[in-house]
Amino acid sequence: QYNEMSNSEKDRLCDGLNFQLTLDRFNQQRSRSTTLKRIATSEGQRFGENSDDEYINGQWQNNNNQRRQQLSSNTDKNDRNISNGNSLQISKHALNYASEYHYAPFKLECHPKLIDKKQGQKLIMNLIKSIKSDFITQNPKFNKIILFDLWWIDSNGDLQIIIKTTELYVYLCKTERYPKELNGIKIIPHHPSHLPPQHTVIIKWVHHSISNDDIKEVLNSKYESIFSIGEMIGSINDKTRHVKIELLSKNEYNSLLNGGKISLFGHLFDVDEFLPAPKVFICGRCNQPGHTKKTCCNSSYDLCRRCGGDRTNSEQHKDCQIKCHHCGGEHVSTDYKCKLIDNYRRQLIDELKKHRERLPPDTHLFIPSEYRSQNDKSKSIYNHEVYEY
Ligand SMILES: [Zn+2]
Ligand SMILES: [Zn+2]
Ligand SMILES: [Zn+2]
Image 1 (cartoon, rainbow, N blue to C red):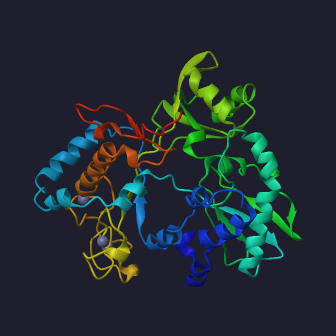
Image 2 (cartoon, helix red, strand yellow; image 1 turned 90 degrees about the vertical axis):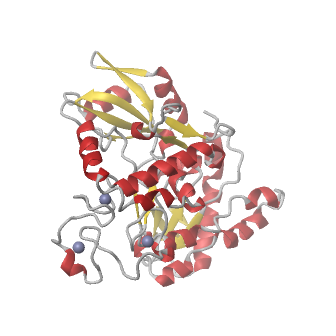
Image 3 (cartoon, rainbow, N blue to C red; image 1 turned 60 degrees about the horizontal axis):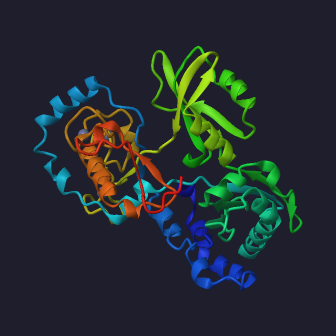
């Protein structure tokens, strides 16, 4: 959605500060130093900056050996071309990007449509007011101030909201928790279709003879808060797949996870945490990892991911030959089969391992097996100092 934002919409991005100050007036009894931590000052900038860049989401399952062998045989002879892979800088931005969960926006469809920022401000404030007491009842341990990280009015006059607080995000993923009307404006909520990883478990190696609906039926008899059930991308083989289960209730999440196993139709299956892999962003101009188009010094025009040529006239690049311009291999240049991307990802993960203290408190990342080292075989990383689960 951000990519499609017009400049005027970007300008209307309501900076967290403005809203924070208004909110502070409502919360004068609270100390300013704690409330300031929640300001999303850099967000507008970040979304704008990344607009032409893409990220590669780590695949979850192991690479199969055959592919890795092919990869090493055709990259060995090309190693010289891409030796600069080792000198790519891992920026702080890249580290943050890798470890941060990426939040889908909540949309509040408004009737009549919103025309100015003040209306939005009032609506947001009253929304928080109206959910507050039920939210606290549902989350008795929650001790922060209830607020949204970012909001703006989109080109349709609807309200878009980014929420990074897991409890609030999950709470608002239930339509009946929204008021039907605020300030005389009818609102129709559209919440994201997935819950954050902290509310997702996976059931592993489930045979195809057991369908997602079958699983739903079994789980529904024990768990009330199931939000969605779906296949895990990249986990499907001839016989089995991993199934992702999202639960609204943290208690039910813990109880399903702590069992370690689940019985489905007489078979026992492993239950595990769902851990996202670190993400890598790739420049939309030169297709190299680690920086954005805005700061790119490698090219003055966009390079085609398929053939490496000038992409200014995109019509000419619909059927061009796929030959990676980083290594000469037969893949598009943003494919993470590419040795250049692979090297970068390895360095990024090493850096994250060395600086666990930089990880946000609520993050737990998966390390794909090919990036684990001889002396550190751990399958995940998290910030030891703040991790609570
Ligand atoms: Zn670049
Ligand atoms: Zn091309
Ligand atoms: Zn390549």
